[in-house]
Amino acid sequence: MAKALLGYVGGPDPRMLSEMRRLQQRVLDLEAELVRMQAENNALVAVATEHSLLDSIDLGQREPALT
Image (cartoon, rainbow, N blue to C red; front, side, top):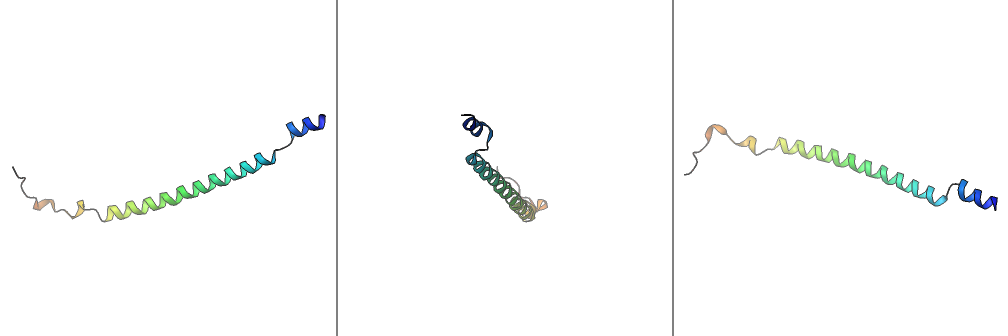
């Protein structure tokens, strides 16, 4: 009986260890995906500011508003 209790209370559960490894790998995968998406977003922002339509408007040549 003491062996059964010791095994139940004191020993590591292989299923829990496996689940912990799986979750740690999932966290690493999600962190890598976040870094990739941040880099992609930064690149898109750089392209968007470079080719902004507002920069192509000549404010000196404004037309009067229609009334």
